[in-house]
Length: 394
Image 1 (cartoon, rainbow, N blue to C red):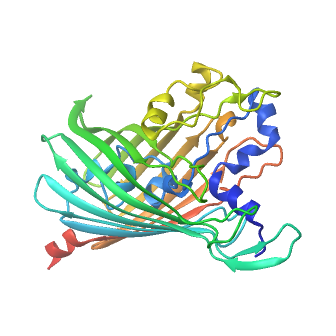
Image 2 (cartoon, one colour):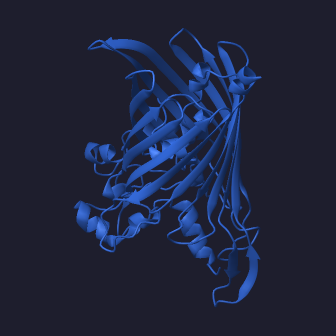
Image 3 (cartoon, one colour):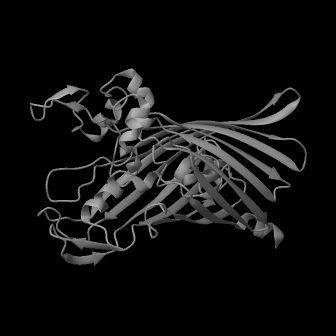
């Protein structure tokens, strides 16, 4: 497929690209001021279970994909060994060959400690590079990947902490020049800090399992794609959430979950129209990573109201029958001035002995005049293997 270098950069650095539709500004009654970062593929929900529940996952039941959502959950996983493989066709409403592949797994060291690993690979398909007058100068398959590991430990019967680290590699141009500037692959090293708490409680003569989770992910150095001094933040993200589950009887179980997310990177300020570089509202975004994290809580040009708009939330529910068949549904919300992603999700899962197969589907709910959303009709597929149960069967 033919796409120029400008379109490539647009896709990769603005995962909320559909927010640039001017109609959203009219609908929101405010100015668009989206936060963009490098390597946004790190925030894509990789697994079908969370994808079917509106992208919730920080406090849901632990599984092989917990490293993305909250690695501290691994301390409470029941089985000794497990791994999963996921595939996500991405932005299929725009182009047919962008996709994310995700491999993750864990191993319990003992009753209190668990280690895990992940491999995330994102490809933008075939790109034909052209010069300013349209002559073909080369063809390339831009891709990005992240390799991560995590360690989780119980500190009590109900609480655990985890740390994770990952190496990030982003090669978008294959060394091609852009605007006369030589380009190179971007690299970064990042860390996660996470906590998880769960406790059984009794309400109205029913036994419930209540959980809380928190995860600050992708705390790492900025990325540069050129030899210039310009460097971009990676998507440092704060995720908080809660979940509650209940067994109605030995066959029927249901859970509900709620997550909030906020990017811990500077908000773009409003610059003066006549004096280049002068900031009229907001704060200078060219700060260190640590300063950017703390600044992100109070640098929105329009004050506290805009800060609150930068918080996304997700709602999700899951129903299991006989631990063999699951139905899931959810909703994701992002304010129009911060990207405008709004969608419903649903999906299902089937579990049989040593493996489970999950599927999810996304339905657009954003309000744009043309009704288009590049995320519409997104599907996810996940295959989970449970070696703990295999040992029991043997």
